[in-house]
Length: 500
Image (cartoon, rainbow, N blue to C red):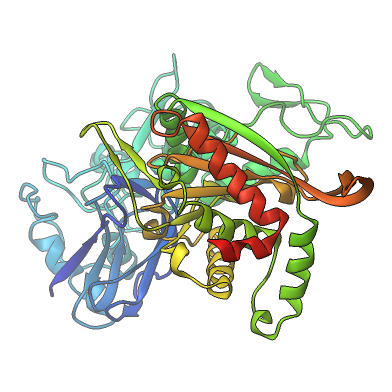
């Protein structure tokens, strides 16, 4: 029965890897073409992948939390019905174990349900088929002659993994390995500091991230394999026992806890580590590249936005804006689109390879959004061609999608200008770094009620600060100042937008 392997596609512009976050299906499920099977995290966003095949899931080839390269098989789909995935197990055992593997030694063609399930277990990324012959491990509960004790011990160490794969092994330093002819229960061997710990690579990575020593765990998986649940339980148990004065991890090693029950004192670990990956990794690299490539210049202006705030209140009450979340950011976005017409360099790009300045007749307006996975900058395509209501709807949709982590790579490519709204955090201003591929970025600060001289008298007015960072290679001080003054002028009097 034919089995199709779905390889991880490139869902963005030249992405080379992605992390498998959540499987939406399990082995045995029947799926149709375009059914969502997995959620992955790329360097830019979370993406749901549809299946290009129809049939029955025969194997999930990659564990959740594993980062794999584009082109790596991640799932196997049998195109023969709901029980096609396991019906071929006896034939597989009698013939070749894996495609391209050496011919296996003859084994029994009688396969129990447990063995058939084991035969479906995935080949882990980075562990290809064995070049030598592969034997199926002894059936559970069957008697093992003393003369086969060595072979049985070897299979005990390998049987927890799929045919054609071998687990990573960690040997205890300065400790003898368990003799092949003396098989002890796995839990006893590990707790005594002897033997080898069996765990799949994703489980080892999880244990490393959580600071859990695999040797101290009692495995609950098949044939003494440490599972994800074992690691998570151990991590939780360590937190629950924080009030204990001390605990013994290994003979002769006593760990004093950091946690304390005194109010106001530190609780938890002194240090924690979080892997740099996904959106945060690409964001960090992009900011470094921009900061050390484009010569940044930043200018500030304080603006009386009292009329803009009144205008926003009127828009909120307007019938055409009932379904649109209106904020001062919408007026700022519209002002940028209008002001860019008079200073096209703001919306241009410096092409270093071609030694050209690329002027763009469109504005793809980026809105920087903070998400749990890092900063993303989706952009509104052709924002300068949208009406005020259409622009407001587009901004609302983009920011909501970004906060949910569902922004697609296409929504973050091709930007020409960016707004970063630090005012939502109560921050007055900043010196933003230009988004790579662009030439300027505007920082919009908090709107505050402050004393201000208006028509010769000191009055309470709504004030904000705008900060513009621009690439001094193609935007000189005069151009940058003119653009910033145009945006400030529209915010001071929204009716002046009719002049553009």
